[in-house]
Length: 120
Image (cartoon, rainbow, N blue to C red; front, side, top):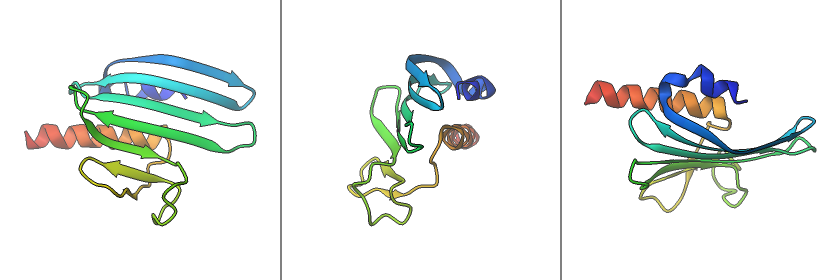
């Protein structure tokens, strides 16, 4: 999974593994990263021995102000993509999300930063 950070190296100023444990196919990963625009990313991704996953990816401004968080906590069953959803700054209720893994997240962030560069 960490190969994705190398594959998207241009997206980051820096990144570090806070913790990583693996046993067989199961793993627990926590990463902190600074993106090339100075914004920050905190991610947790767990694959359990029974094949279930739990994840939360939080994107913040350089100052630590919340921008978006993607996760699969089951507490929003009415979201169309439940349990997968995204929390957006300023909204009380999450939106549906198709970002359910690290590869999708990094692609989204790449496209977002490219769009911001084109606009600004």
